[in-house]
Image (tube, rainbow over the protein chains, first blue to last red):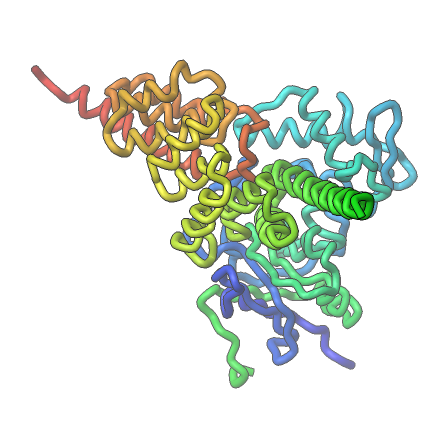
Length: 232
Length: 236
């Protein structure tokens, strides 16, 4: 019987062209590895918009939660699940979840609400009318066409929460919408605000090989740590 | 012969028109993306894309002022590095980018303004103001530089009545700096607080959630508080 794979993350062992600390995920502590980018390497968290902070991905021993189309009211673009179908009814954009159509924009829209929360936390409060306008515009392209499906969720197509013990944390492994759009092309990972960013192509391989799945242990090393082949 | 000449001219004009349309289309898309970046979890990706795409578009759209502006503004915002941080290549590269654009578009108030902020060049700020006297970020950039030089009176004149400052990334911050420089500690404290609570969500210039005005406002707040404490200890 083969042992269940585990992943070891060295978030600061190399640099991208922006001079940012990036690193690798080692399968079973190497040598098979994939690119990863964690949060900024600064010792202190950096104040960020929307009442959030950008911070190092903390070292620790985590367990992956189930794969999910993550949604949150904390970020306006992350309210609607990745891939959800869209439509417009009487100038209100709606999205479909489990066969139910939900208002995204308009006075009762979930994205409208997220804009209101975000702008209040950013201390740049906006009126419900402006929030609704932003919420509606978000789903239209430059030529004024409504997208058929939502592919702008900040957490990418799939994400896995890094659980500490049985508790979920604010950290996820995920791709970004821009990287998803580039797809299998040549792309360079950019530092996150604390989550672990991976490439869409690597995500697909890691899922296929059973590395990214519920229950996988993920050990995040310190930014100063470097993988050693002899350490095994 | 004349008819052929006219036909060639017409074809060239049509081709130029199409190229302009393409440039405008690229510009519109990038401008929209940069405006929306402030609501993204990680705006660096969008800022980096705007930076790269506007840089690449310079080849096919050399006369597009709007694209040049997006290029310098996204560079000022970090060009894909954490927003508010320097370009990976550093301050010298950023200054070169804005100086080149300012030379190429000498009557663009918004490009001159970015250059003035990046290089702290009073001349560039004054040229921006001359190019468009009602462009608020230009006034603010000049006032900011004047405060640095210790001339808060001139800075106050440039800011005028302070209308619309809450619709800019750093207008209220600069007003707070002017107030502190002239000794209006209470006013500086109140204005610095407004930077943290009273800015509009839609700004004249897209700022992708640039944290610098907020961080600088906190510094002004701290300095104003320290000054108030030390003033309180003075015994005549």
